[in-house]
Length: 584
Image (cartoon, rainbow, N blue to C red; front, side):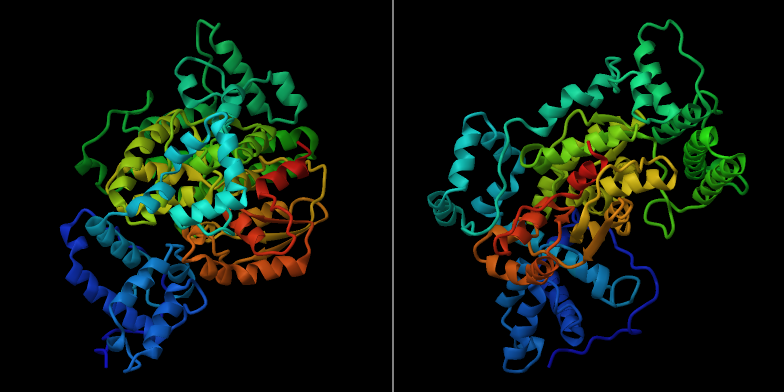
């Protein structure tokens, strides 16, 4: 029999917490210590079994225990441990939705991060192999496959039966697994002339191409039109116009976040003085300034309302904005219960390697929607893969290299007053959760964590502030909407559903189950059958609904669902649905 696990209470009502990933500590890679922890956690999982319906890691473990001579974990061959590890694709659903023993419970179970540790130990010892290295090198493969002429050959081969047999034989890519097309006319190429990049700001280029009149004719807020006009005249004006209240707040926020004193602020005080009772800390000041910015946005929206609504309604709108600002001033920041992050109305797009080279319409649709709502849009000047494909392999050194390339670029746009939006949930999660846990003491990583948003999260924050247009031109009918695991993990609620439900004559059937795609897992021939089994409930739900559209925020999950249905039409991404509804 396995040794009994000493512990405490059953479950907890406390909010789950995650510990930093101690990946730089040599003890993290100690194989004996890893084996001991795997045994401890697997034995607890055996006694619980609540996660049996999630990924294939748990059935693999439980079936092996049930088939063993002892019926306990001590009768299981240790090679099964690594089969369990291989079936984990770090979706985090066990941690988020099932396990009653996550921290702060004394048993301290974080199954996904234990699997990550095991993958990292294996990678450190054995390497990741040619196939995994190639499949995870999204930037390199995309750059080569996207070369003009070459891209046509690559797409044709990938779409042919002969080509798929070749991929199966050489890379172990299942012939029926969905693989994406490549584009030489990338999202960054398509959008650079339309919105420019953050690097253009340093050259004095305007980030809004339309005039104030054009913005007004499109229904943009007076603030957006005024900002556009100011951008166009800035180069010619010998003196800078006085800053508005909001601009002053944002300037002070940017200075404080960059570690500098704002023009009107006193010199920074020593830490000992800042910490004294009744003295405002830098963090408290930043929270207050963010709240003021949010309140200013709400009051500006109220001013628009006041121009066409009764005085009483306008007064109520202003009061609501003030109340929102007051509530924000007491929030504990991203991740706090009830916390609401203010938005600047200026967005830098992190296109992602998939959005840039495989489905550039994602980024184009996003930009069109943001611009329709009077939001100033830029591209991040330079970007590489977020690092999620490397993380899923346990290649943490490569993840660190990607972080070193991306974080300085993202900090530049934040310092310029931009929020960051990316169209792929896994990429947003990488900056919101995984990098902050890998680099808990990196202030820049924390800052990026606080300023990056899922597209529909951002749009619904604008809606909450009264700044989102709802001038929809076309209904969407019945939509089957799949919520990706890496979006659920962000703990932002069902923002995509909430926004689509604003479209008249539109119903949204929400499906909160794994599609089975999970990075490169579903394309590998040894995991293809398991991936389809995992996604079958989602596929069946969509087929039964016969919706006008089916969608997933993760485009790869959408194609995984498509691959498991007979005579299925292509999925329609929620951003495309919103653009259709707007009539753009």
